[in-house]
Length: 299
Ligand code: SD4
Image (cartoon, rainbow, N blue to C red; front, top):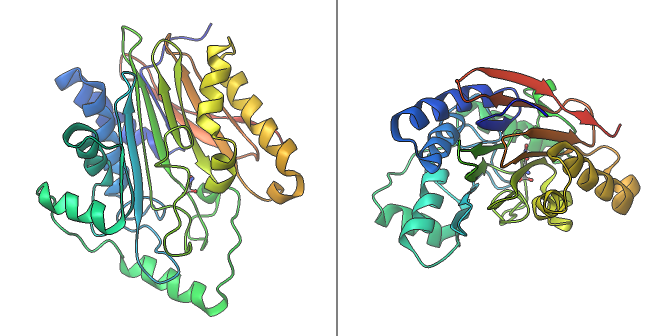
C-alpha cells in the first residue's frame, strides 16, 4: 500500500494550496480550517482563470462562483452563482455553520455573505475581461480538455478540489471554481453540488472532480467514486470506474472533454484518474512534503 497522505488537491497549482492548508493544519489541527486556507490561495490567485479572482465570467460578463465544503459528519455548505465575493469557500463554510441549509445561490448567497461581514471585491480582472471580449467575437462554446496545458486559452478550466485525511482517518473536502468560462448566465456546474464535485463519507473516503461539470453531474460522479470505495475499491480504481462509466454512457459526446476524479481513503491512500491525459494532482504527506503526480487516463 501507498504511504499515507494528509492532503491532495487537483492540478499542479494545488501544491501552493496544499502548503497553505498544511501550515493552517499545523496551527489549528482542524481539517476544515486547513481546507479553507488552501482553497483561499487559489481563489485569490488572479492568474487562475477558473477560480475566484481573475476567473472568466459568464457570457454576460459576470464572474459567478461556485464552492462547497464538507466534513465526514454530514456537515456541508455550498454557494452557487455567487458574485462579488473573493472567498466563496468561506461563505460556503458559513452556510454550513450558521444556517440550517446546505446551499445558497445567486443574489441570496451574496446577501447572506454581506450579512456575515464579507466585503465586495471586483472579481473581473482586466485580463479576464479582455479574454471575454475576445470570446464574444465568435462566442463559440466548446469545452477543451486540460487548461493547465493551454493557459490563456479562452475555455480553460482549472477548478481546485482539496481532500484531507487526518491522522485518525477523519476526512473532509472543499471545492471552489468560477465554473466553465463564458457559461450561460445561471449555469451551475458539478463543483458546489454534494455528490457531484465533492463527496465525503466517514469511514470510507472522499472524492472530488474537475473537468466538464455537466458530465460529472450526470452520474453524480463523486458519490459514485465513494460508493465504489465503500464496496472495497482502492481510490484510483474507484476513480477509473467512474471515468469509464462516463465514457461508456456518453461515447462521442465526451470525446474532446476532460473529466477527472481524485480520491482519498481513511488510510490516506490517494488516487486519481482522468478521461484525457494531462490531469495532475498535488499530494502532501503528514510531514508537509508535497509532490505533483500525473494521473493515468483512459485515452
Ligand atoms: C465546472 N467542474 O464548473 C467545473 C469546472 C472545472 O477545472 O472543473 N474546471 O464544470
